[in-house]
Structure formats: structure tokens, C-alpha cells
Image 1: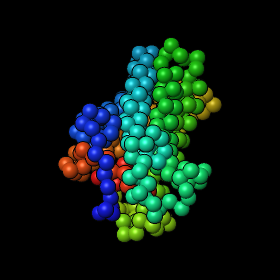
Image 2: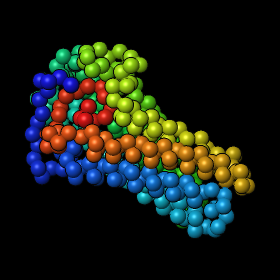
Image 3: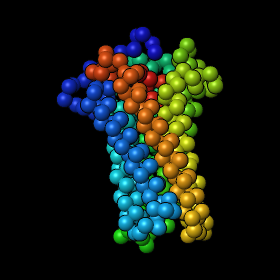
Image 4: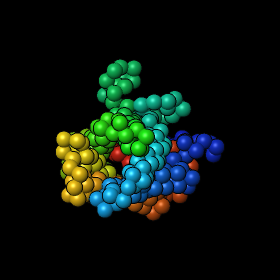
Length: 283
């Protein structure tokens, strides 16, 4: 990061503007990790042995998916709020943001291309939040009282997983376009991916989780589903694998929060613009 990078001091009262504070890290990391564990539990409920135990397991799975999706959404929203600079509601930081990144923007701020360039990172994180919204909507329809809409719920979960895969792939691509030695070089270089191993793992695990859910949930659709041990275990096992990958991503998130965070960063909001996916290289 450029040593000349300025940081805007923020008030102690505004939690959302202090993303590296202990309270912010607890809120973000715990929500993410518990959400992934809820997905593990819910996916397990669809395994044949538990599925045959009765309707209560389906109800438990629906509620666990719903709770997990809600917690994922909370985590994604606070993550997006921190990454919104250049995209949404950042007047407080606009002057320093434009000054520090003047050499990166080829288009004026008031132009359409200029707005797109500045909003790229914020939109990438917003896409992740959209995935969680779709997960939440789909998961609610898994609750037995909405059983007539379960196919719609499955389609929403497949859509959510596709959005997550797209968002995480975009983040990985942006990481490959970020050079630590030349911030003006935005070409993709494979070696750039290893500048931040933990961030790379976090995004890959999350993307793999979404990919497994796409395939697993597809096998729950009526045209592919058969009520047999294999017919139950195949989609449930794939979703369980996806949930495990989400959990691994959550482990890495918390590792970053409590091992890599620098105490001096906790009370400042860096406005440096670059193409890293992990909170503007905040760690």
C-alpha cells in the first residue's frame, strides 16, 4: 500500500465506520461462521437416514437454512457498507478518496464511465449481498408451511449460489489484477493471486461452496429427484460439501480478523482505492 495513503478518522460511536474495531470483527466474523454451521446442520438433515425420521427434520432444515441465510446477509451487508466507497453514500470520505486515487481514474467523476470505475468494488460486494438475499428468500420456502412453493425455493437457492460464484470469481479476478509493486498495472497476472493467500482461500472456499450448492440443489428438483437412499444422499451430500466449504471460508475470515488485523488499523477508515477484494487491503 502507498505510504502516503491518508486515513479519515471516524467517530467512536459509529460502528459501521469502524470496520476493524473489535466489535465490528466480532459481529462480522461470528455471524459468518455461525451461518456456515447452520448450513452444515441443515444439509445434514436431508441425508436419507435423517430424512426418513419424519417431517420434523425437514422443518429443522428449513429453519436452519433460513437462520444461516439471514446471518450471511448481515455479514455481507456490513462488509458491503465498508466497501461502498466510490459506490454509495461516501460523501464523508469523497474528497480524500478522490485525492488519493486521482492517478487511477481515467474518467471524470461526473461521467458514466467515471461512476462505473469508482463503483466497481462496492458493486462486487453488493453482488455478494444479493446472493444472501436470494438464499434467504429460497430458504424461507423450505419451511414446511410453504411446502407448495418448495420448487420456487430451490430455484432461488440455485440462483443465489450462481450469484455467489459470480461474485467470488470476480473478487479473485480483481486480486489477480492488483500488483503490490505497481498499482497502475491492472492487467491480470497469476502471481498476483498469491499476494494475499488468506483472502484468496476465503474467496475460493466461498465460491466452491456456491458451486456445490448449484449442483446439489439441482438434484432436488422434481425432474432429477428420486425418493431413495441414493436420491436423498446425492443432493444432500453435495450441499453438505458446499456447506463445509462455506465453513472453511468462515474459519479464514476469523483468522484474518484476529490474527492478521493490526491494532493501529482499528480506529481508521482507509480510503485507498484498489482492486483487492478484502476490504480495500485493510489487513
